[in-house]
Image (cartoon, rainbow, N blue to C red; front, side):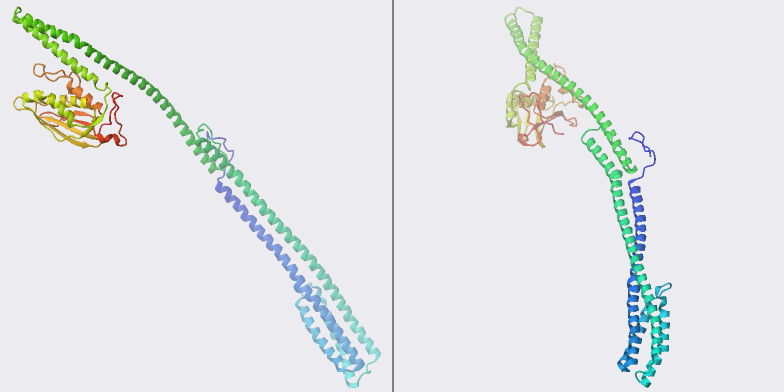
Length: 543
């Protein structure tokens, strides 16, 4: 298997870990079967050799010895009976015959083809010949005639016949001894083979275990250790570390997959770092632009403040001298000159009013006023007091509920109420007295307030335009004003962290809706109280 781009390619197909272990288990099974066969053969050979010695040779030797003793007892019984005629010797003869038969039966059970016990027949033949040719006749003669009846020649013939039995017994004993020695040697050989076979089996199993351990170490554990070490390096952040791919095919494929993940992560990380660097560059650029914008706004505010403040004096002088000129020389001037002087005085007054309102607009957010909890009724009362003449002349009615406690600046909130109520009275309908209604509702950490009237209303398409400074919807001859009032209201509300907008769904009159922070909002988590010393700081407005 060759993996392009992933380490060193193999010259022949690699086996998987399962194939390695399946092959190893097959070899171990074969070795186990061979070992079982050899062990069975060695144990069977040892068992047969032991059985030959213990169950045949040893009983045969003992039976041969009993046979020899039985025949010797018969000879002694015959010899004693011939000499003394006593019955106990005859009984010893008969007992020897019985012992002979038992010994012969034991020996016959041990006889196999080619066995050294095959000469048992010769012993039985010679024993039968001795008994029939000598022992029985002699015993009968002594029984009839008494002791001393048997002659010396007959005794010698009987002795010679029994010597043949002794010779056969000796040969049998020699054969059994040699067979026993051979069986002992065979047992030694069998035990040697058994020990050799089991030692070989043990060595084979030890070699197999060592081979399996080496196979596990070099074919599985070492590749897994290399893969684990490389993976840990990658996990620690070294995404440039290539993963070495060697070992069984399944481990190789796993390492290839891990290396592919590493290369993907490395590529994504490089892309992320590039994007982060670009974002940082853009953030730095935006920060510089924001700083420049703040500096520009600050300079503009300072310029507006200084300009409006410094313009007050020449405008006052123009107004004063125009009025003085009109009073002193009114009789000497014609009607057109007096009209021109009136125009000049009116323009100067309007300029003075515009400068005053512009000065008030520039002061919002610049003065270090403190936001404190206060009942919203207080600034409303002061605003109504300031508008008392206007409301009395127009017959305006203000319907107000009990207002809550908010967090803000008393002077700015007074100015807010004064502008909103003043606009409601100023832009009243000519066929009815103005009516102003104030309502309030809770909206999370804010109070949502609305001020509606029954005046001439505002078309929805001008909902945004009316809050732009110096924007007017009516001629100056119809309605007085500078176009700063609603812009000032918007700046005051946003300075307190709220929002203001025109209710475009109202069918009659005008309705403005604005929000102010509740006094208990300063203690709520996630809400930041604006700092008067940081102009422009505001609450997050409700959505």
